[in-house]
Image 1 (cartoon, rainbow over the protein chains, first blue to last red):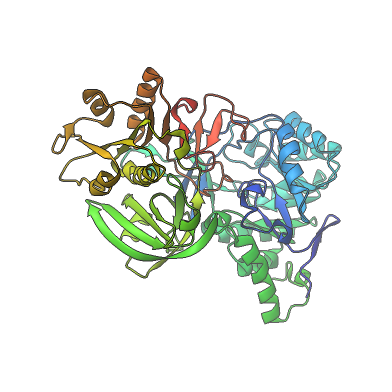
Image 2 (spheres, rainbow over the protein chains, first blue to last red):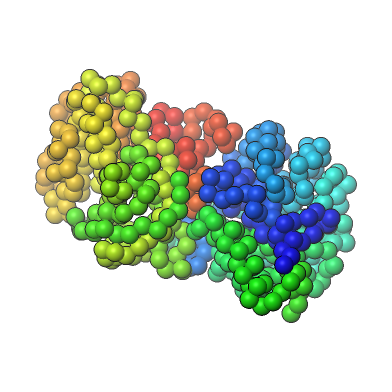
Amino acid sequence: MNTAVEICGVKFKNPVMDASGTFGSGMEYSSMVDLNRLGAVVTKGVASVPWEGNPTPRVTETPSGMMNAIGLQNPGIDVFIKRDLEFLKKYDTNIIVNVCGHSIDEYVAVVERLSDESCVSMLEINVSCPNVRFGGIAFGTDPKLLGEVTREVKKHAKQPVIMKLSPNVTSVAEMAKAAEEAGADAISLINTITAMKIDIYRKQFVLANRTGGLSGPAIRPVAVRMVYEASHAVSIPVIGMGGITSGEDAVEFMMAGARAVAVGMYNFHKPTAMIDTIEGIEKYMKKTGIEDINDIVGCV
Amino acid sequence: MNQTTAAVKEITCIADGVYSMWFRTEIAKEAKPGQFVMVNPRSEAHLLGRPISICEIDADRSLLRLVFRVVGYGTDELASSKTGDSFTILGPLGNGFDVSKAEKDSNVVLMGGGIGAPPILGLACALKAAGVQKITAVLGYRSREAGIFLKDEFENVADVVITTDDGSEGLKGNVVEALRAKDIAADIIYSCGPMPMLRAIKGFAEEKGIPAYISLEERMACGVGACLGCVVKTKDKDEHSHVNNTRICTEGPVFEAQEVDI
């Protein structure tokens, strides 16, 4: 039975990783989750300098999901390389660094700083965070801007580049094509869906940022549809995510066209969610007589 | 720190909307006063654990006591559970109170406001066990009618001063007013309660030049420092975040009052 997959020449022992922002840099969960078992660890978004993020409340529960507006708080690339990368290097797993910025220059600055870090397998460019005012989603909702940032990042990146796409667009297929045409090596989707929750007794927004990104099982059917549309629009590999809780959910995304998958907010519910997902995929393969996980990719 | 299944050993309503619950769990063996656990609701429509502070710890018998107020779906579900029901619990989480900050002969003042009182009880027991002689617990409640909970337990380990908002039991007013009115000697304060109370305690401690350790709460998703949902502003740059924000779930929930911007 083969669960290994390959994306842009990078080999993954299995197709399961975390969705950026839901697993810190692995360190926070490492006492409960054996990072060596994961296909990859995708780190929380890192910028060229430390970011403070948004005021609190930053998170709230919603039906079968949650909303967040963290605002990409991060310690900056220097600390990240010294502390987080140094920690992750010890593990036998791929490291995918999620990169954020307010401008193309800021994305490029991070990408350049990472060019000598051979332990980094891939870069994921966050052009889809709904919770920061400049950069983030602005790049991910306009195909021209998305193309521009992709081209610039590609000029400077030593590692394969994944563009992380936003679901907050009319046509995700158009965005996927824009990324591919500009040279992206892969795409990942979906980031969170812009949402709002109001506290009717306080007559206030629940989140200090007013809006937040919706994630969790509540968004899964939307994510599956978008992964299907994006993967049929491009020939580069797709990493699918949005409300995955189990091996069955992961298989669903792969059948929609994802070469690999990421578990997001469910890590908060159950720290071992990714291990369960890996084991669930194996169980599904045994049960249905599938020899190679790659055989189900885009099979519907 | 671990996520395990824990069975409810006992659950009782101890005041209006306030429940006391004993869980049988190995988490009790590692837990310290002031730490908390994340209790997952059993409904799969509610996926985030509910952070609830630990009230008492019986490590020998693997028992953990949680005392909580019903404020929404998760706590309502917990409150309607029965002996033998099981819940998924993650913990112990956070730093907890540092008992060693109190000298044996210090005048230790514990201040608990409403549902902030439970974690202070566990601390009072630990301080007593550590040989601290002079422990005064100043506890603030809404009213006698709403319930003066945990009073008996506190009286076993500390001198107790009760205040209520309406004066229906003990002194009328808040806990800081009581501290001044009774001129209670304080070398060190530990506290948990609503934010206005913690702000008043921070001010009092600054004025007197004494340390005050306060336990904060915030909406959180992971409880382990990964999501960065539950931060509080800090006076100095935080060592982990490298900005003026620190994680309540990991670096806290207990902070020296002057270090946080509340």
